[in-house]
Image (tube, rainbow, N blue to C red; front, side, top):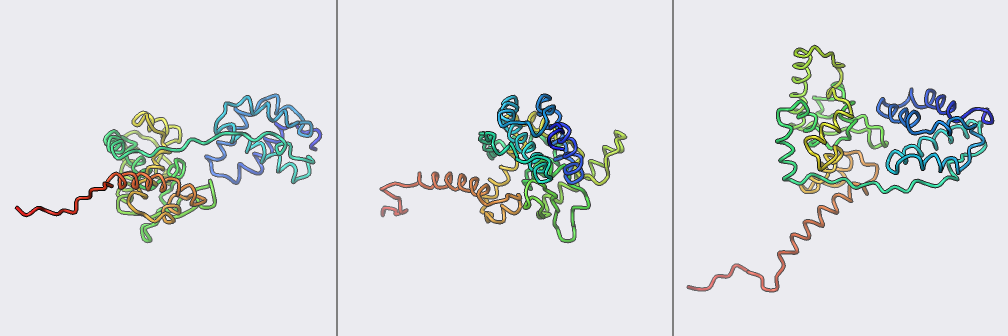
Length: 291
């Protein structure tokens, strides 16, 4: 089979059999976009057994450097690995291709002043409650948009986050009073919009927005940041408030403490810098001269 089947045909079969039935809708859409928009037609037409490392490197070079190129390489690699496991080809050509050298940009948390301006900008808007949910929970974009009302346990005061990025992404977070108030307002808004606009939202979805709508709308009200920066803002506020780093790691679903530690270290460095500025070789002990 591997000698005759084209890469494009195998990608379709691999996607339909092994990915589409087993992944969340957002992950399925991401892979589908890689296959449809970012896998060159000439590469799809090649027989899998005849694809060379140079072919892979050439195809990757046609994709602008960034996360899309990284994700394309990961997707193609997973498809080749499965074909090898099934015995369709004898080697995974991806292992011989050059890795994608891309340094992920570090997110920037909103400052207290920026956060205040952001809260003013979203007040009274349809996006207010979902944006507050991001700010108060630190969840990823699609983790909020896939949240269902059944995932909220008011008795135990917990929210199930069905994250798929890592094993730790599937987790429970606390249903605090502020978050409870946000969800109550969102429920009222959903009911109000259905009545006023005649739109039939899936009743189980808490935040009826698309991922694209969220990112674009956020950029309009906060042009200096990306939506994901609200997640970094949550972690930063946790550090500033003295929340235990392991607790914060579990709340945001980081796979390792390293990611959380980077933010905490930055916050502590700023604290140390401010404290160090208090130093003087002539300290004032509060002594007053007798008058």
